Image 1: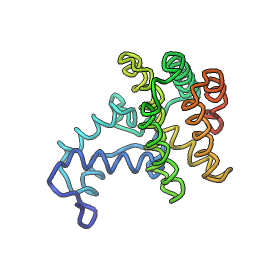
Image 2: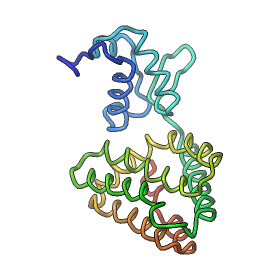
Image 3: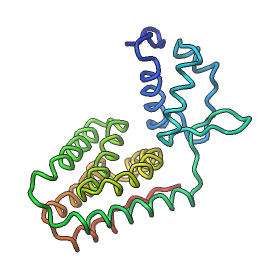
Amino acid sequence: MEQDGALEPASLVELSVRRLRHEILSGVLPPGERLIEEQLTSRFGISRAPLREALRELAQQGLVEHLPRRGVRVADLSALEVDELFGLRNVLERYAMTLALPLPDTRSIDGLTAAWKEMAAAAAEGDAFRENEAHRQFHIEVVALAGRRHLLIAFEPVILKLQLHMAANLRKESEHRAPAEGVERHRTLLDAIAAGDQATVLDALANHGARTYIG
């Protein structure tokens, strides 16, 4: 759908969101990087209107920030803010598990299992962007098991704001450990949920290692 780097007219906003999202979550555009409209419109071959709409959508996803009189930049939360968000994620996931377990039947973890399989396949292929997308979906599926609409509504903004830092964590982890280690950590959590042992699940969440590479 692209020729010489320019985007075709069909769904310019969606394509711009997808391209910028990929560059941000892949680390091509790092936290704090200024996004200059003139450069992006020239590079994508689009006008300012669809680009600005795409940037608004990315801001809603927690990936970019609009700064008064300073334009737009890739989101750059402080270490304290990131730690707070990981803490919220942990609290909400643990609460979800106290509501969800024991599971009514094994079919209820189909979505969680599918997210883990996608994560494992992406890690095996070295596709960091795809692995991060599956990683985010895995955690959404964990909370969705509780079957509580307002809990999921509260959780989704937290995981959206964390996606940039979870992607960075996955990249940093790959520098220190084999890709399979992160996948197996999630498999341990998946197996504990499937077994319905609440104590084991809460322990797995407590030792999930999400904050290991924050920096």
